Amino acid sequence: MGSPCEVLTDGGDKQLADRVSSVVAAEAWRIEDKFSRYLDGNVIHRINTSQGEPVKVDAETANLLDFAATLFDISDGRFDITSGVLRAAWTFDGSDNVPSQGDIDTLMDRVGWQRVTWADAHLTMQPGMEVDLGGIGKEYAVDRCTALARTAANVPVMINFGGDLAVTAPPVSREAWKVGIEGATVDAAEKRVNLRQGALATSGDARRFLLRDGVRYSHILDPRTGWSVPDAPASVTVAADTCTQAGMMSTLAMLRGAAAEEFLAEQALLHWCRR
Image 1 (cartoon, rainbow, N blue to C red):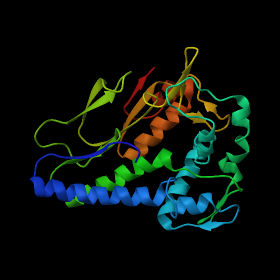
Image 2: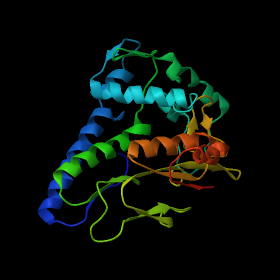
Image 3: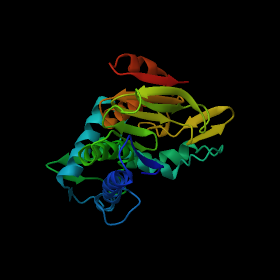
């Protein structure tokens, strides 16, 4: 998941907490092992090394690819799971090492879901192209783990994977789960939210960015240009029924750049935007 992960139970004993944690951890590792682009031998590795040959995928992978294709369409190409190859030009380590236009141009012919053939559970990509489900995988994992935790425990549970989180029920011991939304620094909460049900997801550049000549380059890239989205908010947090929905909306808002607040205002979802 690329981040700290935790399971919080409101009540019960150590045995219950251990059981829920084991169920959640097993599912999180299953999803990590299956969909991580860093591991050999899984479905993502098969796709990314297919060299133009069609790859047949299972139903779970097909559902995620369908979702990614929908996000590509509704975002006018701003959300694109083939854009991960741009990491060869960008390293978001807080330095001023901004790539040149030439660095980006050499990669752009390997980016673009419109170049992909996706039909009947078969994915065919041009040689050199890759997919990366990092933009939707963690939120999907949170929702899967939340569903399992709801079955495994008779007490309220919160699943928190790196700030993308969901709860099974309102807490018993207090009015709501208290969640801090990260501020300008990574060790300080700028806002505290009372969450009784549903999920929260945040997109932002508090940890992953470049800074040159007073300009902050977010890790949120526009796959149509290969460049950091201009005038994007520092962070967007969205509350929704599921973590997948919250993550989708927070990411789509970030990809809108200067129009993020306008986009969020059109959605019937609670949200917070920090410039």
